[in-house]
Image (tube, rainbow over all chains, first blue to last red; front, side):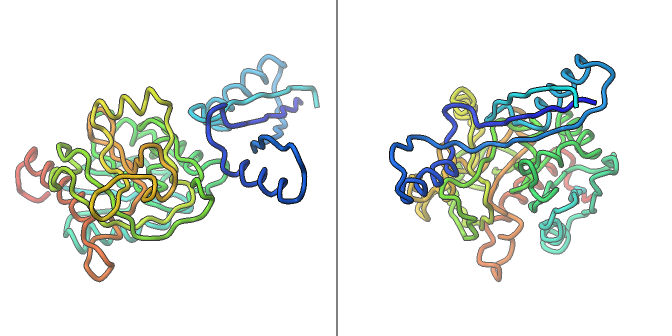
Length: 82
Length: 237
């Protein structure tokens, strides 16, 4: 069993109004020097594959096809034995 | 012309689309379940609005993998008409039939209102019943209608005149003020290279009768019917 921990974030240059709204809230709460907030997604997947390479290939495929939208998002992942 | 309105789990504008085609346009229409194959005698597919799969992960991200979508992608590649409205537009961009992506509205609010869109190109099967520059009053209802595409794709859309509708004021002035969701270049609707696939965020199926506040949506459907009848003869199938 393997576990993939996937992070999906908007690409640089894509406007993140949610992040902006949170940044403004943080500043309104009194925190100084908050320059940029960006919000993304974090997912964990438990996968049963025969080898780590197979699991890795699957995770990348899943990220490209469903878990991220390559037009506006970048993804990153960690794969470990569960 | 025979239409098919796809029903996904979470579609909620299927009834309005079906009703418009059947009772207002008086054309043949059936519902298409998302897990079935696309019947061979369908001439036009409507991907209706709604919250397919709860908009989970990203709107349209999962609906695009439905059984029927494989057939619809093939159908579109063969030149079949596909009209994606709101969530339907989101499904079209997720499936790659149209470029770009639809993101959260810039002001982070769900907008439910009538808007005005200007017809940018009336030389398409979807807009031949309109004048170039004509303004249509059509309602929107969405939280994620903010159209984004990389610069090269926007330029390409502009050069090929594939931006069909842009948000404007009632006089046809396009500016930031009348952009309801932050879409790049006020883009409200685009088509593919072959001009047989249209995706738009506003709901033309809700602008088909005066009692609903506008009949302007009908022009899009009349355009499709006019184009189709010219190609297939004026007999109703």
